[in-house]
Image (cartoon, rainbow, N blue to C red; front, side, top):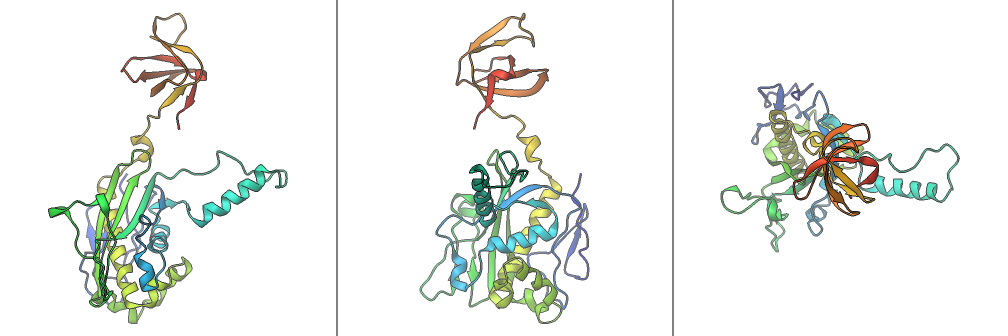
Length: 314
């Protein structure tokens, strides 16, 4: 199913691409109308938004909130992902679970294990390069191994004096650690010419999402537009090659819990392929017959095993 972006109208600078996705080009023209956050017709998956690696808190020098707050606004309003909180919300949830585990909750509170929704992807916002200097006219974040040197390297960052921003969004599959998307975004002071009139409604959503600092200064607005550029491009890329994290990573390793045997067919009278000792790793194919699972071992042997002898490998 293709992702269709809805309700993106009122700004002539946006482009309608094949598949029904509206995105803003990297160098959009100023307009009296604010840009629109792209909206998807269905969810791509579940995402957690994480800060760049420790030591990259470039935003504090500009008195801005973490860019994660900004990206969460885009994700929430776009409807392209289900957003899970792995920050303060998770800390509060862990406190509640601890109280429940100690027996402090009322009967019927229904707080326990197995309820937390898993994230399919992690989305990390950063700026494009490292370029710190004594005058603090440029602020950069290090991408490390995400972008190599040479033709694929990103040059830019945030220039306070020139009011320009070059940013990067990285989307990673949590199960496989595959980098699903990496998009660059650019904006400069001409991209926020609309904010003088008609922009109050657009920036109002930032305050509600804990990202009001990006609405209060021109450089904050420029950074916000650069991230919107990158996020819109990411939606477009995912529309062209929509991932399915659960289906792409259907095979999950299991561990032998009790001594058993690997059989050629799903019955105890079939030939024994080999004996299985506790601790051995097996890889289910997805085929099942009652309590029997078809698996392969680390040597490539294929056969059937009773699932009650197995446990998930973590």
